[in-house]
Amino acid sequence: MTQQELGAKMGYSDSYISAVETGRKSTSLKFVRAADKALGTGQTLELMWVGMRRKGFLEGFPEHAAQEARAATIRIFEPNLIPGLFQTKAYAAAREAAAVRRGSSTQDQADERVRFLVTRQRLFKRAEPPVIHAVIDESGIRRPVGGAAIMREQLDYLVEMASRDHVIFQVAPFSLAEHAPFRSVVTLLTFADRSVVGYTESADQGYVVRDDKTVRMWERAYDRLQSEVPTGAAAVDLLHRVRKEL
Image 1 (tube, rainbow, N blue to C red):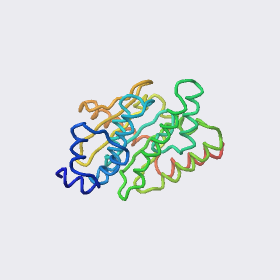
Image 2 (cartoon, helix red, strand yellow):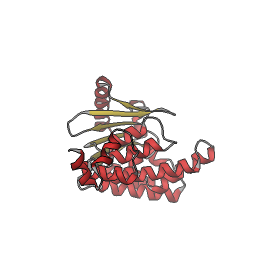
Image 3 (cartoon, one colour):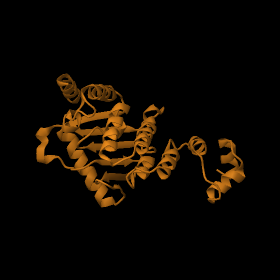
Image 4 (cartoon, rainbow, N blue to C red):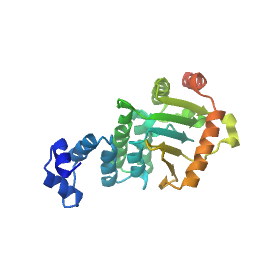
């Protein structure tokens, strides 16, 4: 699109579009949302805008979230907690409240991270949402984050998500033991052109991984993991059992 064409679609003048492109003017949330709509980029620009302007996110994570918004397929392994895309707001808020009590986060940062999570989860509401394959370690569904009531709500939400056509949900049982291939969170994003980007985290850093050799190795490990852990009805039955214990 030309600047004139984009401006007409967004409701802005072509001179304003030009000023943003050259860095002479900053953008607003209203502007980036209009740009995402005009360009058909989902929430990519919005998530980049929020991530760049807010503190309290791991370095590398806002870039990952922006890529996540345009992925056709998302594969997730989470070793200790419910993955962010599947967290209820109450579950996420309980985790952030704990970080505030530890002194590792301010209340403003905690509130911002919860709002950011809710924004990320809007991808489920698209007319054509991405295919999401989530493997959660059994410890993630048994750790009662926020207490029994919040965790019951969270497990109910997982059961509901597992019933969606575009979601494949699995639980890696404790019995998998040392055969679990990953020790930290791993996400693989596949785009419409079939390119794949990985993401992982340490305690204080997020890493977007583009190295082809590493990404292919993760893909092979993820494929093996898929074949070795319960899926479908077996995974949902385990969720029901854990909920009953609560």
